[in-house]
Amino acid sequence: MTAYKHNDLCIGVTGLNANDNPGPGVAVIRALKEGLGIGVKIIGLSYESLEPGIYMHYLVNKTYQVPYPTAGTESLIERIRQIHEKEGLDMIIPNFDAELYNFIKIAPQLKKMGIHTLLPAIDQLLMRDKVNLAAFGWQNNFHVPADHKLLSEADLKAAAEELKFPMVIKGKFYGATVAYTLTAALNAFHQIGSAWGYPVIAQQYIKGTEINIAALGDGKGNNISIVPMRKLYITDKGKAWAGVTIEDPALIKLANSFAKATKWNGPYEMEIMRDGEDRLFILEINPRFPAWIYLAAAAGQNQPVSLVKMAMGEEIIPFNEYEAGKLFIRHSWDHVVDISEFQQFSALGEL
Amino acid sequence: MKLKKNIATSESGFIFNPATGDSFSGNAIASYILLAMKNGDTEAAIKQNILQKYEVSPEQLDRDWDDWTVQLKEANLLESGTYDSI
Image (tube, rainbow over all chains, first blue to last red; front, side, top):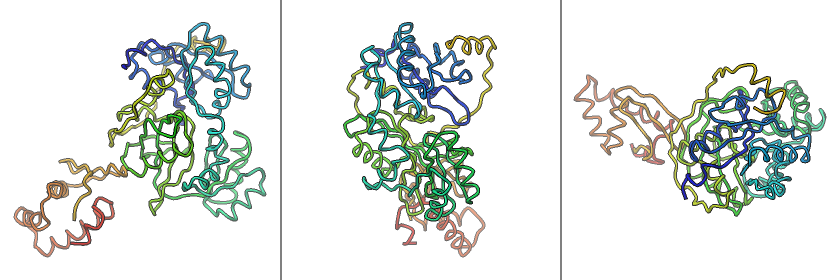
C-alpha cells in the first residue's frame, strides 16, 4: 500500500507549541506531510492562542481551540464533534501527556463518529506513570532510579536522607530539576508542585550519557519501529536541542523488552541514562511521540505515518533498519503574522 | 589493535562512533593512521610509512604510538581486547 491511499485524510494533531520545551505536534505534522503527501489535511487542536503551529499555514490547514484537559471529557468530545462536523476528521493524534487520559476515555465515542485513534490503554498509561515507574521497573527487571513520592516537605527531607544529593525533583507530567542542596530541592518541590500538582517525585540522580528512544508499539508485544538518539546539546530544561541517531543492539533490546512487558499500543519515548557501568536506566517513559520525532522519519522510520496506517487498519511490516549518524539541530525562528490572525483565533477559537 | 568495525572516519579526520554518538576531530596524521587501520594495515607497516614520510625517530614514534593507543582506547573506538596485544 502506498502513501497515495492516505493522501486525502483529515488528521487532527495537538501539541502545536514550539517553544524551548516544544510539543511534538509540529514535528509529527512535518513527518505526516512528508510521508503522506501535501494533500493530507491537518487540523491543529490548540489550547492557547500563541502556540506557533497555529500560524504555520504551510503545515497546518486550520486550527481549532480545544478545552484544557481539566475541563473533562464531556467538553472535549463536544468540541471535537463541532470540529468534526466542519472538517470530517479521519483521525486524531494527541501529543501531550496531560491530555491522553481524556482522549483514551473518549476513544470509543470517537470511533463511533468515524475518528480513528491509536492509543495505549489506561492501565498501560498508568503503569509507566512517573509515580509508578520504579515499581514497574522492579517488577519487570528494568534498571530504574530509586524514587520517593513527595506530598510534604517532611517527605522531601526523608527522601534526601536516602537518595542523597544531587537528586532530581520531577513533576507528575512535566518539569525536572537537579537539586544539589536541600534548599534547592525545597524550592523545586514547591515550584513544580504548584505548576503540575502532587505528588512531586524525588528521583535518584544517575550520572551518565543521555539517550532517548522513539518507538511505536503494535499492542501485541512488538515494536513496529525503534530509533535511538543520543542527546548532543541539552537545554537548561533538560531537552535535546541537538541529537544524533545511534545504533546499539542493547537499546533495541531494551525497547523490545518494554513492548513485550507492556504490550504497548502506539507511540512512546524512553528516556535513558547509560551509566559508567554501561547499565541502561529508564528515567521516564513518555506515552506519545517525542518532539524530535521528525529525526526518526529522516533516519528512515516515519513513525507518524506508520501510526496513521495502523490506526486505519492497515497491516504494517516492522522497520528493521535506520540510518545511524543522522543529526538534528533545533533552531528558533521568528515567525511573523498579522495581529488579525491572533485576534481571530483568540476571539473565535479557530483560524 | 583494531578499530571497531562500524566506526566512521573521513579524509578530514572526523571520527564518528555510531554506537555511542561520540564524535572526534583528528589532524592529518590521525586521519592517515585511521584510514590505514581501517584498511587492515599492520602497526609495523603504518609506523614504517610514517618513518619514511616524517622526520621522527623510531623511539619518539613508539612513544607517540602508545599515547595514540591510549586515546583510542579512552574514546572507546577499539574492538574489545585488541589493544592488549600491542
